Length: 123
Image (cartoon, rainbow, N blue to C red; front, top):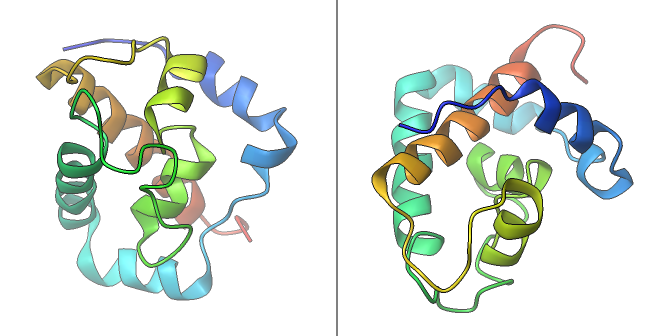
């Protein structure tokens, strides 16, 4: 599995005007709390496998909705929304399918962001 210190990534993301404007809505936080971390991560993994992991995802650059699930919001906040952002922010090459370690890495990035949004005072 890719083991990366995520602190430098989250520091860089916090300096991006675009990325730092994303936040979970009260509805998203309620959904995440009701479903639990394991289920939200399972959904996130499914989304990544279907929408981001293929070598040439359908509608790349437009495949991730802006709302509708906490993982979608997290993908935009963490630059894991398309293969171009994955390359620019995470150094994961385009044009080839993501491997299992890379999928696990993306899910771990999403999980960290969602958990950070669930803490008190994250509004």
